[in-house]
Image (cartoon, rainbow, N blue to C red; front, top):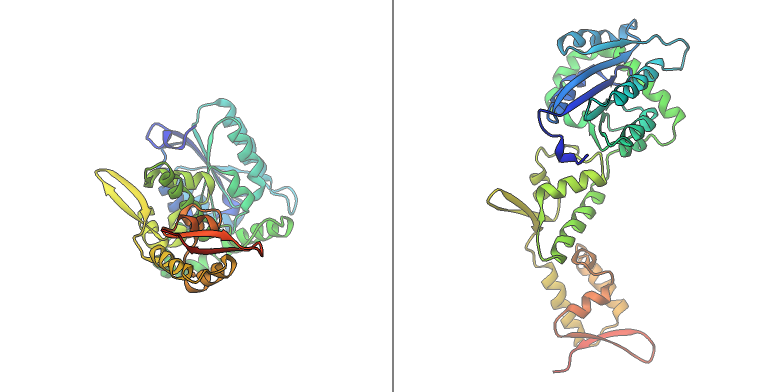
Length: 339
């Protein structure tokens, strides 16, 4: 299923919440996010609800009409609720009456479940915290970090007031998460993709469009990023709009024509300055290897690969008035082209 096909009111979604692994304070964010995709037809939460730590979840289940699926933990260290969530998910999958699944958990144990659902061409959105297993995050078509979606500044006072009431819940969920960290070496403190990796892909998208004589479309670029990085969400990096993320967080800018918005390179003089510098060095016949070091030191922000060149020599060959040649020592040098 293509990702844009289901963002409408007719999309049927199965929302399955691992209550033992998710803090109840994220409930508003969960429903706010999932309703953007369509209509939630299954909304269930799983846990041992005899435990006082899940009392807030029981209260919220009435407010949001969530069906609580109670599953007693028969032995210490074993999470029977996880098994019940998997069983229900497979049952819903075989009924073939939903278009999307939303699994709310940071638990890597659900990775295989997500893979199995996707084998049936069903889209999967995951939600959890930014310390979630990278394996689980990558398995989902999209993954939303709930602790990044919620504005920490706005909720700081509210969270402080609720800290005493929620302390038992926090201990309960942290206990489950810590237990997973001790048994799964792939869980890291932060599963968010480093912004430099995001920038590199954006550069590739823009460069590919340039090679075709066109411009990168803003919406298509975001879709491509989400395919590459299921966890990508501009809110992870402090922005509420993808366009603002592009304009402030990268070396690109946007241009709007009618209803279409495109990503283009910012107009700067670095490339021109580098070309002028190369021309000046060509007068003295500089060695290519030494020139590369000088360019790097003088223009640290300049990257010839961002312009589509795999080697510095290829970029230099494109500079007007300059050519490469080889001396008897087998080294390459630059010089001004003969007129």
